[in-house]
Amino acid sequence: MAGVVLAAGRSARMGTPKPLLDFRGRPFIIRILEALEALDLKLRLVVLGPDAPRVTPILAPHDCMVVETPDVTTGPIGSLRAALAALQPLHPAAVLAWPVDLPHVRLATVERLIDAYARGAAPAVVPAFGARRGQPVIWDASLFEEIETSEAATRHGVNAVLCTHASRLVTVAVDDPAVLDDVNTPEDYERLVREVNRDIY
Image 1 (cartoon, rainbow, N blue to C red):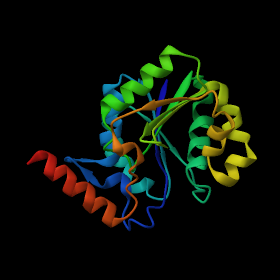
Image 2: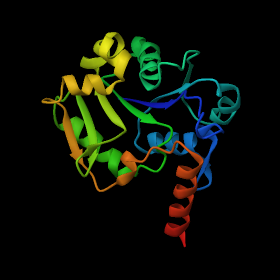
Image 3: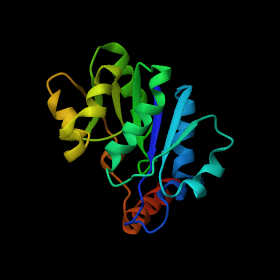
């Protein structure tokens, strides 16, 4: 399984590169890479966009592939496609796609997703908090071609692929609201910092 950090967005609503925001003393992107290392996912890839010149230098101590995608107008589906194209020669059995604005997803949550994937032949494994599906998502290699070519995914995002296979995917109920908590705006980030400080003190 390859661990993929999706970090190519413009961070337009945040006003500053989200990969570089601090979470518990580490940039978002480093926190996620460290989690992938702790999960023993030896194949790790980061997808970067316009902020690549600022982000790439801090990745040097970490053993990961870096892919830059010049076209970020397609959103997360474009980043995931760029990752799959780069990984194609390596033939991973699956991809764990982790958006960079979810650095606070618990390691135990992701371990549960990986365990669920290992137990069956699901085309995708998705966390759910309450009745809502969240991220990160594990994609089996059997869906790679569909992700890369689906016109519905191009128009509506990769969730269109999930919807097509809704009866076959595995949904893992988790007690982790972070799977739904995209950090997109300064207000979101301030709330996250308040919650982190409350947990510490």
